[in-house]
Length: 124
Image 1 (cartoon, one colour):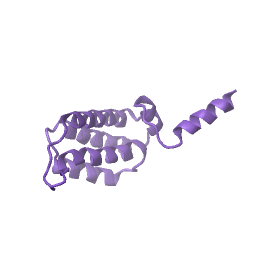
Image 2: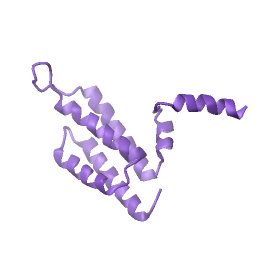
Image 3: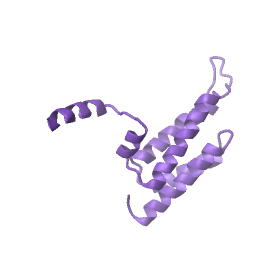
Image 4: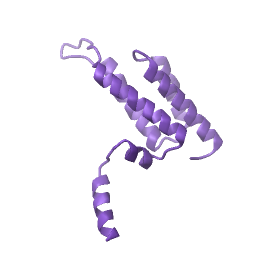
């Protein structure tokens, strides 16, 4: 997982993700805290996914309709994003790698299927 400083930083990021998930709406203050911590980290795998998820999550609160009027967030989508943020926080605390996180949460990236397929052929 890395040095103790890296673990501490990931733990701090996990704390902020859980605080964001606990908020009833979007918090620019917590986003700023997350962003400041992220700038100190080696952003890869799980941290990169956290950044992407927060971007999508914020869109729930900032979206507009065709008349450019703000729309209310979809409670189901907000709930799904909050759960994802909690899962990411747990992964950061446990030291899970990106591959471990993807497997545990059924996340597939381009090429994952082909790699599995060709890997199966190599085993035989």
